Length: 188
Image 1 (cartoon, rainbow, N blue to C red):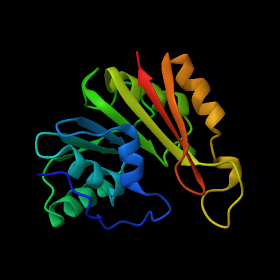
Image 2: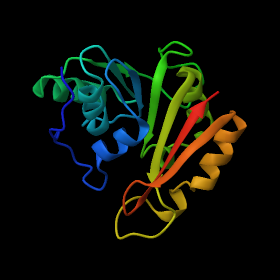
Image 3: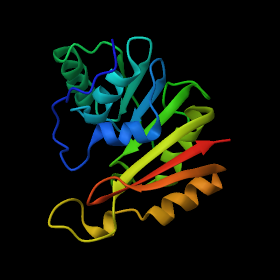
């Protein structure tokens, strides 16, 4: 499977997955975890195209129905390097992906939905190999006519503080879209 810029259908038109995934430096052959991938697999499927046949993208979600939808979406788009993984990311060690296995972990529009934000980030850290990258995208703490209520949104400062406690090094902070921030960390 060659690198492709073709668009995978999805419902998250507020974010440009190719821009975001290119920021984190996905390359052919990488192992990627999309933690909290959802049923449409908007980023999972794009990442799968970018890592090619020699790479694998693990779509992780707590909802089995979302994983079944992800599998169907992947097959409908001729993508066969996506592996659905059922897990509760709020339980450290629960995800059936080995320690130090992933090149890149993605946490996109997930943190505002979970109570145990620190555990979700620690679980991502556990699965990342040394020098691996963690990409966090979430809603800015500003009002918008849509999206989650402002009080549910997680500030980038809070994410940076949790990441720092895990000895993750901030590589880049960027505007992921009009309503989202992006943070890229490296595991040392």
